[in-house]
Image 1 (cartoon, rainbow over the protein chains, first blue to last red):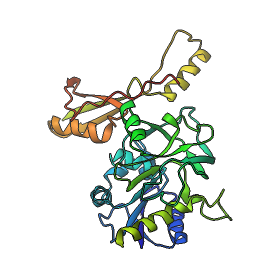
Image 2: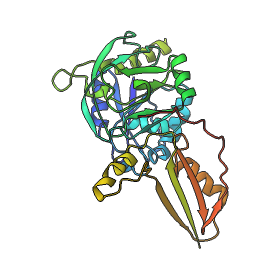
Image 3: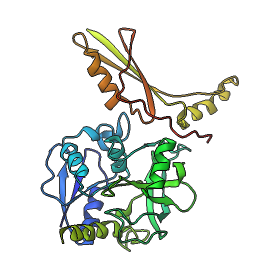
Image 4: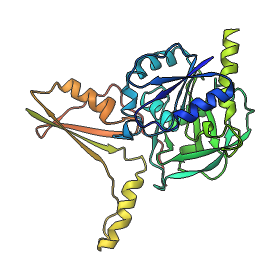
Length: 225
Length: 97
């Protein structure tokens, strides 16, 4: 299995994302923002960081990067895509996920381990979790506050597309404590905290994040069978 | 040459913590009579010739502003340009934070 990891100018967590992919048992393939080529990968991770300096709005310029053209088409066709932190912002700007991520309500950058409650294991990236399972992964963002209009929030809840919520105190003011959502098909997931930083006991708060990366391999193996 | 100005503001129902932080600083300058501050963004584009207004609106709608959370107005050489959004976005959830 090949899992692509996109590097934009200003990406920070592409290295850790590729490492998480390798620890999960897949081959990480580095994808470059300026090349409209997915190199035959089976899934894609959009990593955290500050793509294009996060100028204008987080993810607003990255959304028009050449690599995003084939990626958006492939995502619509069912390619599993995981957007982490800045990657989540890019997916919202690209309208592959609804809503937007805005400045934390208290204006402070939040850098700490957070507890999440998994609410859906029907996505390509969360089959390895139990519903209501609590996991601990790091959060590090200044613009992590999920917002959407009421109808969108209601629809997300009614259709099981809230993938994870903050189980402890809401760290950024996200509406309805939302930390992660998916598209209707469940192949595109955006998450604000960082599962790729919680995959090894030596460096992570836990190894709870690894299941995002093993889940997608299981999902792909099931799809191929 | 034409100067196109795009003014972008967070929608009124979207929390603006930046504006609140500015509002909190006003009393330090002896100003107590301000009930609300909102912070927006002004973008100026210099076109070599007459701008294609449809294209300008598309730029504003797709890149310069995010209509999910922001409103924008476009003016060319000081004259307002009617916006042509694809579909009006529903108002975001009311919040009092």
